[in-house]
Image (cartoon, rainbow, N blue to C red; front, side, top):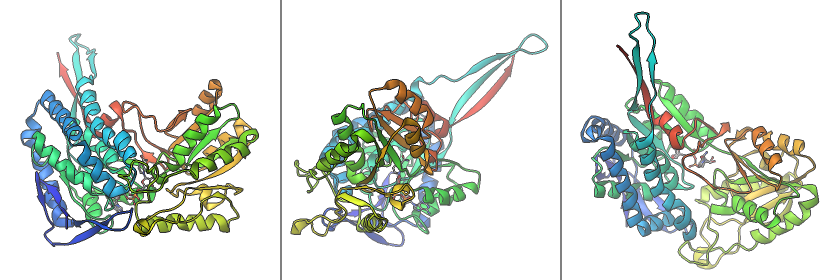
Length: 486
Ligand code: NAD
């Protein structure tokens, strides 16, 4: 049986305790691998390796040498594209087209984009007047923050992990990554890439394990970690923020969402149906930026609900490697229990189930997978749990609206504020609403269209801070002022 070890100081190592946990396939519940389970000793070793690397060969590289190495990492990921696609499919069970066209290419891009950003960024300088007339020169040094703890979720594991590791390394930091216990494979594979291209040992470390009382909690509490970047649930973020308070460590958080899609009657109908379909059901709804609340202007409501129903009922369930497959399982049976709990709650709260609502009939070889049907509800009040709470599944509630003011208020009436999509031909209205809706990202007539140079993050309880482009540098570096009297 395949065993996935930690990657510490450039070497794959098992746990001192010998403890392992199982990674099972979401597709059919078969055993994918046994994973070494890290505890305090493995976190200690990884943090120590990362601290040594800061002042070792890595710390002495010139900016150009560091940038070249990161380009090397990106190129090696591309050379081993099929290995990464296979690993990510085994972990998540999601169709290969999602891996090939989005998740793995973005992983490689995350190294190139931030290498370019750091190479091209300018630092400020000021000529400061002084009473003697000779003046002073003030300038800024941008220095790495140190050892970055990177705690990752399972929904787009490689994309989201490299989105942190890429800028962290570009800025000269070292990292200790704690992948999700559900998806450890691509983080492990990236260790091979680092060694192949000659990234010095200790720069990239991975410790596997769980959250509370395990690798996640030990890493975020470790005083040798200078800053923590976390992607995951808002409630987990609260716990990590408390851990980070000890020692005044900085945090960057990308958290949950309950995102609204808003469709006006003047929208390009087919584009809106297609875009909302993708934003609700891509990756089986397990996308932080995905839609779980849909608001449709009343004249279009019935037609839109029927069109989305047809699309939801047309998904092709299947194994990820099968080219015909368009729709995969949820990540685990545990997550399926949560999602099915919401499916039941919707009915109890009086929803009309337009489609789905349960577990599909699957052929015998897939019957043990974590499958659920894409699900659409109508008829619920805004107070219903499935309209307010993040489900993180392939489901949405659709409600009609009558005015721009009404739908803006509905979109804002939630504790989360990650993203929204607006479908309309009236661009003046789109600009007005983009300014009024309290989220980190607004898409107009698009969804999931990302330029990595732009600011990314959530408002309200969807996050703290912004990453992307130069905004990542604000988290992964510190600015040091130097004042020279002339
Ligand atoms: P999660 O919070 O359960 O787990 C995320 C990671 O935190 C895992 O590695 C887990 O082991 C670790 N963890 C859990 N408890 C911990 C603790 N006490 N201390 C330290 N580490 C701990 O989230 P998940 O279920 O893996 O991911 C789904 C969530 O992530 C959803 O809420 C989704 O919206 C969010 N998400 C947000 C973004 C974004 O960009 N805003 C992107 C992707 C996912």
